[in-house]
Length: 390
Ligand code: NDP
Ligand code: MG
Image (cartoon, rainbow, N blue to C red; front, side, top):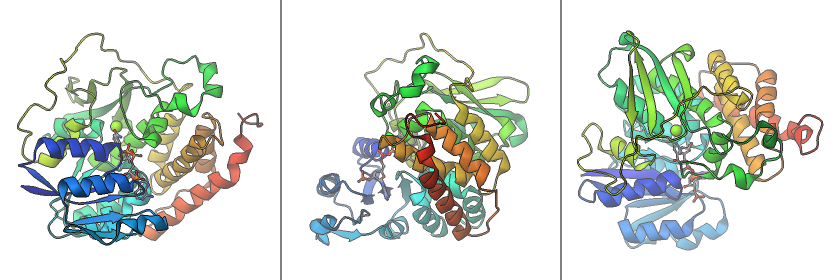
């Protein structure tokens, strides 16, 4: 029996994690979790799983309405509570399923406490990658990626000698606008962006996917997780999302990992790791090999992918700039304050304006993160609908 803690149980990854926990009640116990604003979900999960500790991170005063305990569950408030959850002595595996770089402090706390981490929260790795890798050197903590492409690559790379691998390749569905005529991208709506063709996910990652910004973040995530340089990390569009990752061996042969596009696969793998998942996860759906397609990403449709490589190659704080500028720009798009095509323009402007630094401490990265967000905040009006630049 492993004790599991989940940061962000009320989100899409959180929900898939609950499915896995319900499927394997004899293997896992939900020991602790956080929600930000979804008190109803918190209450349901407390009643169903009776965890030891729950944290409500939202600053809304009404949040306190749940009180300080429910049954045997202790309830705490405020984002610092995520660190308490991450370091709870009885927790074996921490699932980081919050969205955004906000996940950094609990992730660092868990590494320092030697916890195993099933990491979904890619923005933390993208922003603080060098720091996190440094901390991992002195910890017995192990990161297992939950992101489907990285989980596929993790499984393909396990036991391989790095010198036997020529490149690693991430697949991308191509997102909601994959088949839209290019000129339509000028005035796509938030509703259209949120209509993802294959995956059911939270709003931010769904918008990120539409511009292949999610894939850009994932290229950086792959770099920090597996240590390959950016010239050895490729991206291929694969609309069916059946193949998630590929590795190219030094002899040129390519191996692929395939599964249904459902997050329960990588989540179950990361929770059971290093044991294998003992039973079928999806019994009713037949696996379809029909019409699997692959194509190169088009840089006219997805300009942010090249910007992500540019930020990644610059290294240091540049990936933090890319991530923070994107978090802010994505938020503005979701609030219908900027058009979709303004997002890559703001990313490019932020990368042009904020020089690369190589901070040694978390505060240096947090400072860059703040500067990138305020850059977007103070420049986005140039890119509003009908404005000069879009
Ligand atoms: P969702 O938007 O569905 O869920 C986000 C979660 O984070 C919710 O539990 C939310 O709480 C919580 N949250 C939001 N803001 C804050 C905050 N300021 N402080 C603390 N908690 C907060 O996101 P997803 O589940 O889609 O994604 C989560 C992470 O996993 C992201 O980093 C994403 O890139 C990554 N990922 C997601 C995949 C997917 O299939 N969805 C696939 C691969 C990676 P509440 O709802 O209570 O407000
Ligand atoms: Mg992914």
